[in-house]
Length: 444
Image 1 (tube, rainbow, N blue to C red):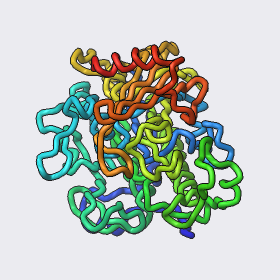
Image 2 (cartoon, helix red, strand yellow):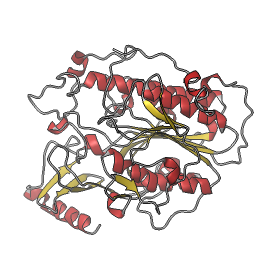
Image 3 (spheres, helix red, strand yellow):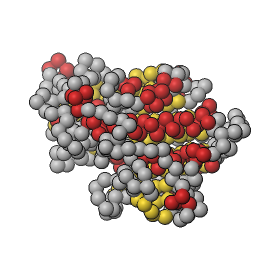
Image 4 (cartoon, helix red, strand yellow):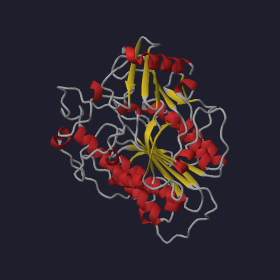
């Protein structure tokens, strides 16, 4: 097991570059309040492969996420938040651009998926609104975030050049433009950098995109967050395939390590929230916590993501806007990752963009009003099935999936069957519903 210690990523880095990660935890907390007429700061925390049912507030009685749960109790939960593409790269591109994959959010010109150079991102618009913009963490799109309009990129996770996964322990990072190995755990290091960014920009409106790499593999078991296979096996996820082991060793359905990594991430969320309070910024900061996608981890017989099931496409999502969102509010309205960018622009006081597929969520956040009656998701590859593509529509009750231009279809009644155990595509009783949803997906 790994043991975490409270870190200060300072001396090693300071000697190399002037910026360093200057130990935001040590800054004097006696700070004057900021001008309340300015737009609010925005802290966007993006988790990596976090399932909707792997946080405490979802009703999971095993996982321990007290800080994420507190954030949910102080803000609004968006309990039907779906990503437009349940794979890290394309999902992040949608969050950044507000566009679907099929609408050109990303392009592959032989060097992997990239955001089109001519595409404006959330950073460009937030800059227009007078924000200083920062990006910390995992890009995963093969480009430096400065190309997307971010003013400051103090710590960036390099693309995977030496293996399939990002290094989590003593990782190589790009610090102020220089690649170096930094001691410690990557999620703590990124949190240190985020705290420093908040401290350095406390007197002006800021927008910080903090893209963690947790709880993405490789998972680790931490001494401070122990979980046992016994307690997890006692409460398997709903719909777990019969005769399939829930825990079968490291790296394969390794739920104890997955949960331990989530609890470690939760501690860092707590550090961020605590520092906002100490800096006097909590009341002036909108905090958004979302995951880029979920993961199957054995559910429905699949290990990875890129598939249409709820475990991959639906993610935890919380927004806390003091004085605006009602503490402890829960929205069951449909929301999508294409809605994030219009929402942030609305928060920043910018006009709506007419050519965007998403809609601002402010009616939901401020008044609990739904903003859409269906969501759309897609993937150009099927998880662990050798390729293929699918599209999905979810409305208030139904989920319809079309694979390879209708060579295969699925229909689920999420009201009666929330864990997608009964495929109704061949049911005569539901033929009219199937036909209606087929027509809707064709019109896209």
